[in-house]
Length: 314
Image (tube, rainbow, N blue to C red; front, side, top):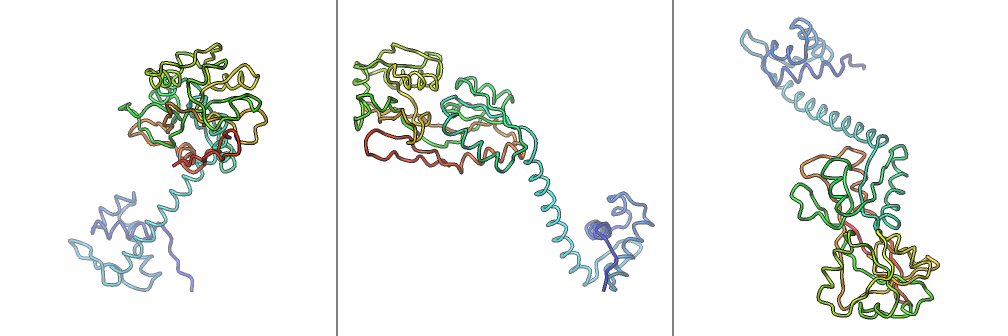
C-alpha cells in the first residue's frame, strides 16, 4: 500500500513535536499556519493514526505520536549525516590543495603520497611549495599552504605539529665508493673523503652544526649546495660523499646510490605535518593530510647485505 507523504511533512511533524506549538513550528519551517496544519493533517491521514492532541493552549504527542517522533528523529538525523558525508566526498573529488615541504622529503616520500592521492582524487590539483624549513613554516602560518611537511615547527605556538617519523642522517655515496662497503661510518671517517654539504641557510645544516658542535674531527665541505637533492646529484656524479636524511635517499633499486649509517654521534630529525592551530582543512586537504599517516616510507639501502629498516609513519 502506498503511503502518500514526503520529507517536508516529516520535517513539519518534527518541528511541532519539538516546539509544542503550531504557530512556532510553522514559523520555523517558513509556512503559514494553515499550510502547516494541512501538512500535519496529510501525514496523519496517510498513516491512519492521530499523532497530535491539540488544545487551545498547546500541542502534545499521542502515545503513537511519541513513538513515531523518535523514529522520525533518528531517520532525519541519519539522512543529514548521509548528505553531509556525500557532500564531503564530492568536495574531495575536485578543487586544489597546496602542500609546503622541505625538498628532502619530496622525491622518495611526498611523491609517493601524492601518487596514491591522485588515484583517489584525480581531479584535485596539488601544488607543492618546496622551500627551506623556515619558509615552510611561514607559508603554513600565513595560509599560503594548507599544511606542511617539515622537521621544525613543534615549538611554534600558532602551529600544530604532528610527528610522523624520526629518521637518522646517513652517509650518501656511490656504490663504487670505498665507504659503500662499510657497515657504519663515523663522522671522522668522512674527513678522509671529498665532502658535499648543504649551505648554512639550510635547516638541515643548522641541525647538523648543532649536533656536531662538540665533535673535534668533523668533515669540511669542498662542495656546497642549497638543497639536499642537489647534493645527492653531486654524489651521484662521483664528486664526493654527503650526510643526508635517510628520507632523501632512493630505494634499494637505485643503480648508483647507497646509504651507510652515520655514527659517533648518531644524528636524527623528526619529520612531521604542520598546520595552523584551530583551523579546519577543506575536505580535499584533509584527505591528503590523513594519507600521510597511512603511507609507509620506502626503505633506503644500506651498504652490504644488511636490510634497511622501514620507517612506519603514523
